[in-house]
Image 1 (cartoon, one colour):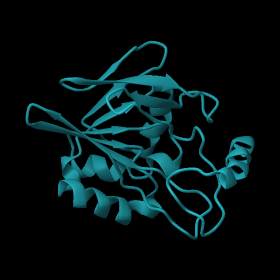
Image 2: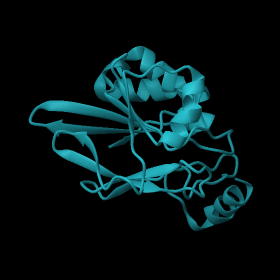
Image 3: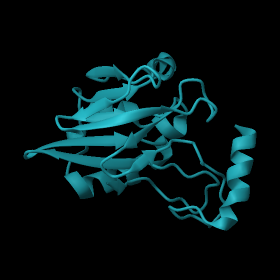
Image 4: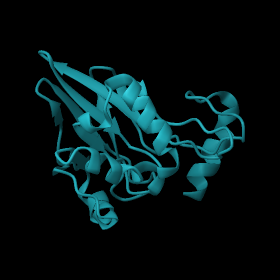
Amino acid sequence: LWMVGHRNPTALLQCNTYLRLFDDAGRPTRVCIDPGSQLDLAVVRSNIEQVIGNVGEIDMLTLNHQDPDVVGNTGFFCDANPRVELIVSEDTWRLVQHLNVKPGKVRFANPGQLQQQRIAKNHSWRPVATPFCHFRGAMAFYDPELRTLYSGDLFGGLNQVGRVHLFAEQDDWNGIAQFHQIY
């Protein structure tokens, strides 16, 4: 698991893009979680290339919800690999499709209807509804192998300019509360 997003010290809102690699008996599956903002594309692309060599090798994208800081780079990844699969809730897809993205396949993961979502031959995730963060179709994915919740905007927050880090600290709770009150 790699955090491949951009930590921008001049921004109040950070976008968390992750790359998760699975190995099924020598056959890799590469999943980009919340491909991020178009403003961060150069950094996201470079970070992914450092790990796997070519962004066209991304097999799947997961989208927490339709906001541009989460899905802005979806079209780029679809163009880089026309066979890429998109894992998304139906509510989110209803809006994302208006960005004219062309994935090879759209797979719906609707929390409450699915217990597991197969990611690779021997790996599954559990979709988790997060409808109050901040869209009806928003969802997170729980990865039982790593015991990690890819939470999208759940616990997202506004940071102080210049204060960027991956893990929240006590001083970050005011920005988290402010973000959730606004959105």
